[in-house]
Image (tube, rainbow, N blue to C red; front, side, top):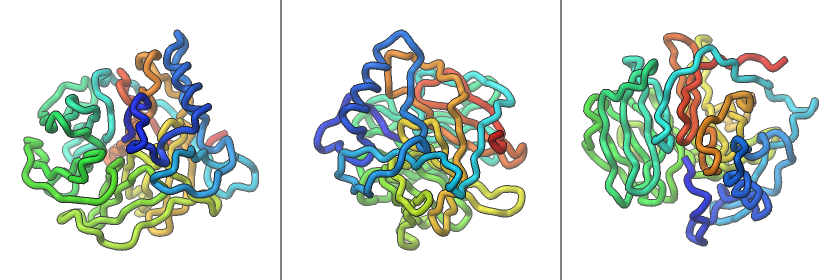
Length: 308
């Protein structure tokens, strides 16, 4: 998900908004000729007290110290494929047919499309209304859901044509979305993951709080629900303005692993600090992941390996 640092109005102020010094540094870096410097990895500083969705404070992830019990992983690049530098990527998945499903944001530019992995040839596409800001997407059974940022509506779509077939309301903001067969998870930029019915979009159970070594972690953004080859379920999550990806236990909310993706080249326009890592897709047939970012021209095919 989020969005655009240039629009930090009071109505937009939330847990995803950076502290003023950090935001200033990011905006300066976006105007330099150097590659974009994303925010420090989530594991480089201690967590601040928990904030609410109306708080302006940033939440870094705790130090990567020896006392932490989480697995330390790295994104090992297997191959690089072309992607769309026009896509403000908010959601990324691999369809059952092995194609990419991509959801994009920005008012007046938001859309959802299916594309080939290797050459990014678009197979189907649908645009949102001009006033809507697109967010996370997921395929849940025989339909696709697409979030909107502040409209409070999820759009239900046909997985082949991507045409709208229905809508469902929800409270608050929509950021990331992913689905297992029986449960969907939705992020809103806080430390909470909503648990939803994949068919109706109704609340299914109470939210789970994402915690790392006992402390809440917010700015949870794009999500990917993964059932690995051992049958274990994980939710992988981007953290807004971080190069770390969290592996989360969907039952407890505990962070069980942190993937360091700082080694991926961000070849997006360095003048725009919004062009950060955002997009995780798992291909179960190959047991690998695809990673990209907002307006990134590259899609990275990676494996998550133990850090050395």
